[in-house]
Image (tube, rainbow, N blue to C red):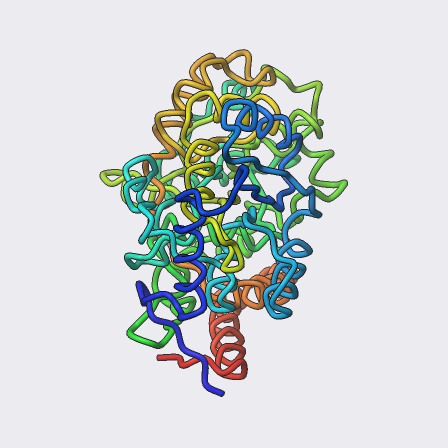
Amino acid sequence: MRKSFRAGAALTVATAAMLATGCSAGSGAEPGPVELTYWAWAPELDKVVEVWNEENPDIQVTVQKQDGGDPAITKLLTAIKAGNGAPDLIQAEYQKIPTLVSSDALTDLAPVGAGDLAGNFADGVWSSVTLGGDSVYAVPQDSGPMMFFYREDIFNELGLTVPTTWDEYAETARAVRAADPTKFLGTFSANDAGWFTGLSQQAGASWWGIDGEAWTVGVDEEPTQKVAEFWGGLVEEGVIDNTPMYTPEWNAGLNDGSRIAWTGAVWGPGVLGGNAPDTAGLWKVAPLPQWDASTPATGNWGGSSTGVTTQSEHPEEALEFITWLNTDPEAVAALVETSGIYPADTASAASALSKAPGFFGNQPDFYDVAADIAKTVKPFTYGPNANVTYSAYNDEFAKAADARSQAAFVDAVAVMQKITVDDLEKAGFTVK
């Protein structure tokens, strides 16, 4: 059976029926409070939900802790297919939303007013929950705008300036190696597709798109080719390391000062503090180097949202709760304190993040810088087989990094495109 998907398409009959049921339930047809279940993995989320439950006796939410990422999504899809056992609410990473939508697992919340929330979020983040159309399949919770972390003390010691463009980054990488061959400016990592996706997003890539009832795939296009060619050239030249992130060698480099910068994301203080605690107060953060300095941009590395499943009979009440959870200043502040997130809601982020992370006590304006960067996230549409594309990245770029060949980096992008298209067609999707 051929599968298809239309952005902003009408709800399925089944979903519409549930939506109608939910509306009638919210009108008082059922006695007692509306009870919602919420599958999530954010740390101590139940403590935040307790605040809601105390203030809203008519809508009670129960958090059911899940394993993060793929296990929760797999469990949800199994329940949706069986026709029972799904929760009302699900925490979903942005790249999982198209998979859930194509499996008829998420309710379109636009008919119950979710579109009114668009102004709370950066356009790039909002596009991740709308798939570029008029439907709204979730409400953003947290995001991971990418940033440039660097050892200020070593930059000063070597007489370096913070690169503001990628050309300057390349020159700085060369200057580091010339000044001290034991050091690298950074590393290319072939073990985290989300990192490379964010860099491609910054360059203007959107790896999937929707054309009528067909998916389009744009991995092997100019923005991603440019990113691959850039990093492949630096690896081939030997001025950037090819050690993957989170390995013992990479961690050691953060500690001993042989890796003096990192293209990371806003949650980076936790990584740096956990892996190199003795370097606290030595790092600073700045925007990513730019392809076009006149048009600042960044990509996202990580982040999740809250969606309402098609088995929920209470989409209006669910939206009321998740609007509070992800946009109310009190709720967002509680999420920051208990779950350690970087809020997607721009206004609440500004009020909740007034003090720099302890690891960056030397940069009191850390979150001011982060807020300005977060506003520049470029739009990006994920597809229903992002996991396949990510796996292809890990396989193909691992080989390219080992080969230290710029041409191999560019070829890896073409292979990712083919694997993605072949998988979509094999699954029965229409692809243009």
